[in-house]
Length: 504
Ligand SMILES: Cc1cc2nc3c(=O)[nH]c(=O)nc-3n(C[C@H](O)[C@H](O)[C@H](O)COP(=O)(O)OP(=O)(O)OC[C@H]3O[C@@H](n4cnc5c(N)ncnc54)[C@H](O)[C@@H]3O)c2cc1C
Image (tube, rainbow, N blue to C red; front, side, top):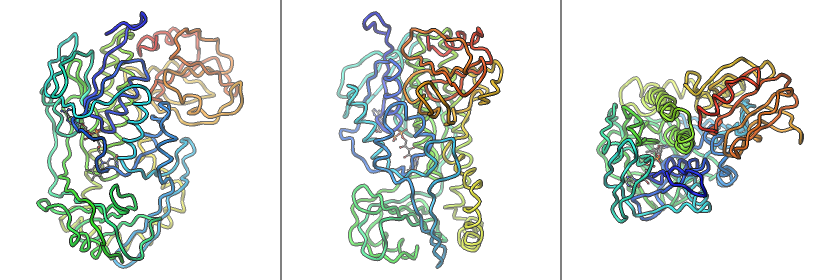
């Protein structure tokens, strides 16, 4: 800890400036920590892998003031043409029947743009990203962490977070093992210019015996990104390979230029623990999924938002260990469940066995044209699927930070759930809950007749909801989850919870 103007400030080292590390640095900084970010790559730019940013990620990033910039570059009403062995099914997924999120849509946004926006915001807040600085080793002790680097002097920190990807040096340095395995398929992807009839206003997905082929009008180094799965062992795509994939997908286009290509080996992996003393793992360092469902980057971003405030506030908490341990207890089960269902979807998308192949070449082409229009018309079904995909169902009801002290009738939100974006009225007029809470810190939502909660702490924001009667309150954590509900704002549980979470 360092004392700045008489205030104790926690020093956090973030290793890795991918999406997880950048979001973690922003959240820890916004919660009062002093942050250093290092990345071994000399240059910020690298080809995108993730293409989708989900609604819950946008929600948790909103208090950090980055969402407007992210959405400026995003496609929020993506259309897809499904090519099903000769039949073409146009699918538009725009406004979904999910009224409790400000983002009821799929959001196509290449990972490189996400990283650019997060990095620019961090630097605008005077947190420099030290590029070309590699963490080589660390020593963790009860009182702090000593880090050693290539291209920088050794330094000590209160906490170190490994956001250093699937082969995490941090994870290996503290001896945390992993459970998982390698898939027998790999992804090959490349950026291309195409001649032909394809308009750049829609993505294309095609079913083939060998797997699904995706073509997005969102390349980093050319107009199109082509992505396919195949059996392991091939090299990067050539123009000829690209053409063969387009032909197999029955897409009427010719490759005029291949700008770049890579092969990505696929694995699923879960770290046995997320914490070793003062060292934590987040993002791909903690869990790796197949790309199915676009969950990896999104899970990492949400790990970051969960952990960042806890590191900054632990020094103030009555029991820092409970606060810090809650990170793994809340987030590891999310990764475990995600790995399980993305394994299944990846098998259906790319499995080389006859059953998976049958699903893609017979069941999907025959079933989808019959079922999909009805499913899309019944708005509740896509909405239910969207809630899972967009990670809106993630909740921490059994966390030790979740305290249920009685259910306020006028605001019956469960403890541990995300704060839904419901309409409410406050003194300055009608608004929505996630607009009220769109700034860093803890939010206390007082019901209309609740006694005032006095607090001098600038990071606690008190809002009175004039259209919700009762004497209770809801306390919302800095990551947007409801931590406490009570029918009496005067309850001793209120100061207890504020101390438990390090808010005061
Ligand atoms: C083909 C493909 C498609 C995908 N599509 C999606 C999708 O649509 N949606 C989605 O959510 N996810 C998707 N993913 C997953 C997503 O790309 C990853 O989950 C995401 O990149 C993880 O971010 P991260 O910040 O945790 O790690 P990384 O992106 O791996 O970043 C780690 C950083 O740490 C740095 N680093 C490593 N070691 C050190 C060291 N010793 N010292 C200093 N720095 C170090 C690296 O240089 C790197 O910058 C996809 C993945 C693949 C392969």
